[in-house]
Length: 354
Image 1 (spheres, rainbow, N blue to C red):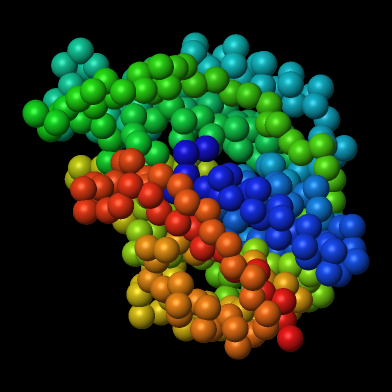
Image 2: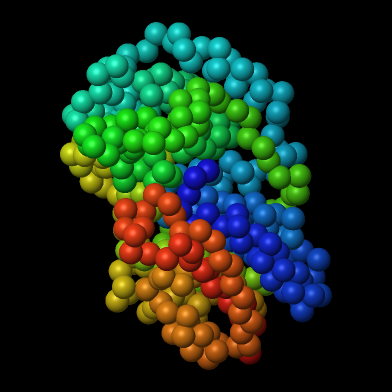
């Protein structure tokens, strides 16, 4: 999934931190808490090292992703699931359903004559397939829906006419009219590739798990006896609820009542307190105080509201701190890229409580 803050590039360092915790605790498998699960990549990685995982995020799409990809393989009837996927793929193009709101609101009315009035997030065919897949999924057995929605959300992200977030779509730089691939006609194979439902690829590792969907600061003190908590809060003013509104629309599949004029963003998205500069540090202090875990692994971007020096000063009051960092390319779809460095650094802090 194309996702700002996706921690796939950090998994090597996270793995080293986990091995250190296992050595210090003398445990082969840990009780862990992924406090801001997002795309779920860290929770899935931790299955190999966990006896129990709690995965939390207050976004609806994140909860679906977690419920899908944390499922233990032994609990899934893959033969029945494969039959459902094959049936939906066979029906999707010809299902006699009325035009859905994804096609109506987020694809051009006429691809050969796209106008400034059109939103161009998807090809017309893919928008129609998304509408049809989503409505057909509601008719499948309830215990299969998350397993179907998880891969569909990935397709929603991958095949969009965007740089990875849904604040806007690619346009012709000269005319300002939506255009697949933008002025440079970039990534057309990805954008125009036909959306097709897939069976989710689940981890070969199994463990007990719990998926929560709540404000992390509210639930943290309810989870007891943790060995490790991974904490990766939003680091700036850009909320995931608006950046990834399309994912939530597919989860609920309810036509929004009120949307923004250009991008069609619904008005009911939620902002985290961590997206507010004045609240970010106090909220993190509160969270760290309330988590019942011997080890804390905090990940924070060096461009975030909390400076590395502020982070160090706070964490050193809690316990012994090991620090490491990972440098990666700045998000290339950023509107203010000219004013930013080419690379950003993810600061990671492993804290062992005193």
